Length: 433
Image (cartoon, rainbow, N blue to C red; front, side, top):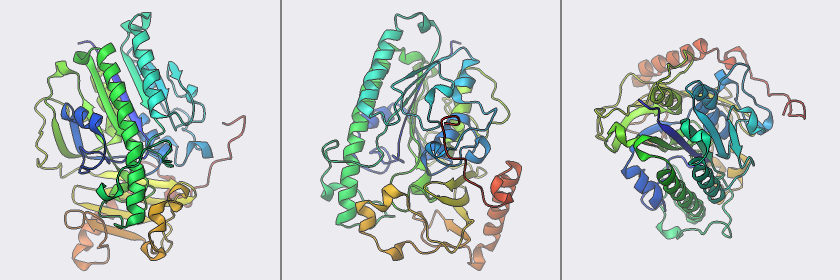
């Protein structure tokens, strides 16, 4: 069977803030239409709540402390020697790869294994990215490389802060959805309204990208994925291991010849599952170091949003560095989340873009109390993760079980945090950039 063309579109800081994910006021009609013909994963997660580590997992199939990118690439974090990226893995199956727009794994995108890099700026906007991708796809139809299967990865600056009104037309603050984890006040509503303006532009660009994909490739044999790097840029989301910091949109439109009906999947899935899925589509045996498994895209997989979750799956989440050192690890199952804070008794740090946000200005310092060493949440009864059950005697057994599982995962993956504080990388220089 001919391997499919593959397009993987990713963006900054969106989380799952789309109209197809419990956010009806979000202006995302293009992605709404795409979701209607795709498999939508309702419980998809990044491995980390910040840009470079999350993307490093998406593009290597390994946890940040395994692949080496435990903080931001522009702060000097790099892949460990021997780590292989998605384009490098796909090249073994005869794929020709192209990066269009943003990446955040290295200061030099040409070292990541792509055959071509287009628009190699650090801050490529969504609409120019869509135009560059359309031009590439159009020209590819008459190029000798058209005979090779294609891996196209597209990345955009949106929807990262800031959202100035001269660039992004804000929504009506009175008509936005305010999630439970944020205070519902004028500050938050104005901030979310600006966020919606950026999402609208991202959605328009994705619609243009999808039109070009359908015009210049064969939808019968093209797999298209849309996702975000991590959660949304608000307090108690981005930079934290609470669900709003690591939950992401994940929409997959399989090749039409696969005859996979559109619908929703409710089981836990991870960005770690994307590379195994693409290798499986390309008929490539996955290397043993991959931490994920192929996404359930077969035609007989359960589609009902209320289908039972896989009770035995646990996802491991982590953060080590962002603006500063903040070592935390977590395990998430269908029902429970356990977070281990390695600097307890400190308030959660807030990244600079969030610290200056209107939402933060509408919150009190008391909204950011010092963190305990262990946090435990029952996500069925407390989806906002507000009631810490770690010291509740009725939850001792599940706390100890999850804590042991987390410790074992850290041990078998050689998490450097087990040996003490993780030092920062050397500052970038001309020779190491």
